[in-house]
Image 1 (cartoon, rainbow, N blue to C red):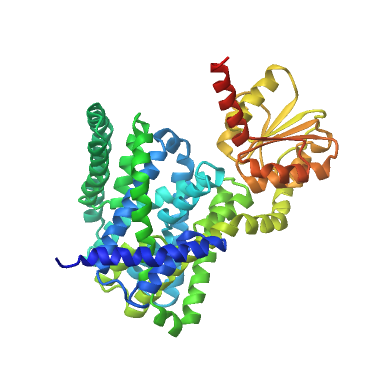
Image 2: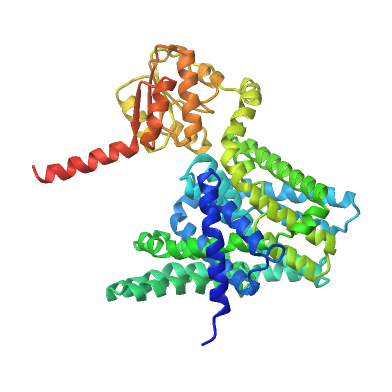
Length: 540
């Protein structure tokens, strides 16, 4: 019996990626970088070990579909409504400004309007696959900067439909006639609405019947059918496969079976999505980079800096703190996986010359490869820049300086902050609420609290909140770096203030005590105490 070529290729992928990932992980680098390096080694520009590149690309696309499906499951429609400001305003401004600046830059080099707009579309998209995976791995999806990142990424993915239709219109010679494009867009929107309604009403009933069978194999097959089936149907109407899968996951996230579905899909998602990162590495042409090293490096740096600066500007417009805006800007500074669709379309319609095609392709891969490093060091970079320019920004804000004394400063208006503020209000204890999420600031004010928008890690902000005369400050936010700086700044400004900190992991406790906290409450430890207390209670 003859060997299976695909099986051989998959074994090569695993045999190379596993040791490389182990080595890079031990030296503190993300596993995604290991996948990129694997792709370069086994790809055409490396040793050419993989023979069936097309099949690997297909499997990689399945990985992206599964990744977006599970991310949709982990979200909820209610949460998407909560971050609608980040989606519509943040995402819309980011794409509009990026396309505008790229268009100006491209026309200066004599490129046509169609090519300039195409390049603007390509550069404006970021990598949902990479950024969302990194956010999930670091448990930052629901953080303030996670909300802004997700909002912008979601708008980008939705805008991909219009971008594809516009590029098709340019390529088919109808670039000046908007009617065919609007007609196709209307069909795509109508199809998406029908798919959402169908998935929302029919799929839960199907799962309900499948669960009655108590058959894990049938349950798993149903998950794959819903995920890939929805993605395939949406692709028939010009909507990307990944966006269709995300919609399917988002719609059924409210069902009672969503947690079990996530548990079943995770192993397959991680396996297939790793193939995507490897396949991107295969596209990297080492010879082209060597021959055009300065040009490629310069263009990569320009795109990263420009995209980051645009997102920082958008964050400031949305009234996010400068430090969080910088983190989001660095996290979204790459060119995304959906841009490869537009790049191939541009080549097919002869919009991109060979050199321009190779340049954009290589720069896209390089920006994606750099993303894990930017993601890892973005909090530190944002902290340095924030300390230098943030104070000047704070001095120009209209936040009044409080006249309270012996009051409580509540940093963060999440669930813990809401409960604490409610108790303080009912017991008539003077308090102030500080948040970096403007929607939560409005919610706090609506609940009858004195709330201010601001980054607690800035000493000037703490001064305006009356830290020198405060009796107690409670820090209950998910941003670890901001928590540490808030504790240190509060202790430096008031040696007598009592600092209570809620943190997520027990390994952060010692450092927070060293920085000046009086009480540190780790969720990890408190949860374990509650669990064994209830177990012991059952045994009297």
